[in-house]
Amino acid sequence: MVSDTLITFIHNTTFTDIFSTTSSEVLVDRQNEILLYPNPATQYIELRIPRSYETIYSLKIYSITGALIDQQIIRANGETFSYDVLRLKNGLYFMELNTGNKKEVLKFLKQ
Image 1 (cartoon, rainbow, N blue to C red):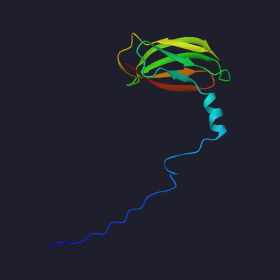
Image 2: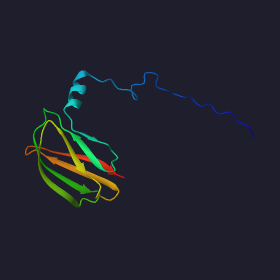
Image 3: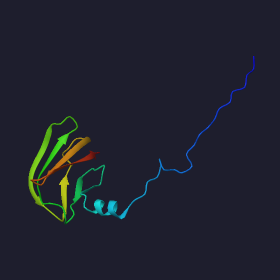
Image 4: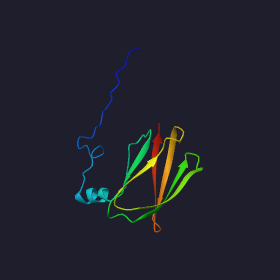
């Protein structure tokens, strides 16, 4: 038995679901974010802290399971801060930065 099947394809030609526009407001917001690099890291991680960011007073490192691995009291603002990851085992970690008014959590991979 032979039968014909009709299949109708619908596609999006505007690409609105793939591409998004970037406004200058979004670019300004990105300039005020803390950058963590290189990621993945093997020896150290650099944090670039924007001048407009509040002063960071503490840094905590958590394992993927939530165990506290390291805690340091620091004072960093508008500068680059290095963190040594050599002693960490390979895996995924979370870095928590506290300013007193807010907390930011960044994810990094140690290889």
